[in-house]
Amino acid sequence: MATATTMRPLVTLALPQEGAARLAAQLFLAIAGTLLLTLSAKTKVVLGPVDISMQTLAVLLIAAAFGLRLGVATLLLYMAEGAMGFPVFQGTPEKGIGLAYMVGPTGGYLAGFVVMAAIVGWAADRGWDRHPIKLFNAMLVAEVVMMAMGFAWLALLIGPEKSWQFGVVPFIVGDLIKVALAASLVPAVWSLLKRS
Image 1 (cartoon, helix red, strand yellow):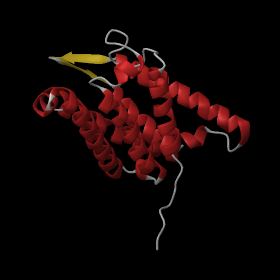
Image 2 (spheres, rainbow, N blue to C red):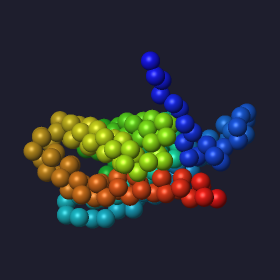
Image 3 (cartoon, one colour):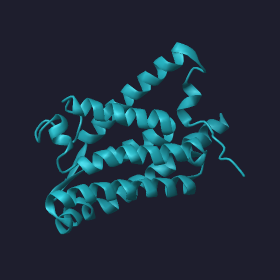
């Protein structure tokens, strides 16, 4: 039976091989990742009743560059910061903070970000981050799963019709563009590194 080959994600090229220096570098990257996630959440475009942020793009890029373990750890650290009341999410602090915000309308999407990072990170660990088509497919699956989780949670709060109308439809085109962009950027970086 064939086993999946584990390859190194992009970020491992810059990490020390072992010891305390590696752990410190990973911690630094996770914290830097949460800062990027916060900035991307606060960068928004207002289109009608919903705001579109750059957060999906940031999650995809972090997961593809960091791989499964560090990518998921970064997203979990980000969620922990939000749960502790730091204003790291798109609607914080104006729409609440902490766990109260996290169980609100965006709760399913936030949980979906962690699953999204796991799917894309898994793909990156297997070398899919070097191939735009493979990476696009993995990111598209991750996007669909995240949106499904967000839709399901929002449907419990406001009903399926409104959830579809306000929680899915306005994001389809923008998120497809973000998936295509992320699936192009990471393999492009690998190509540049191969040439140097």
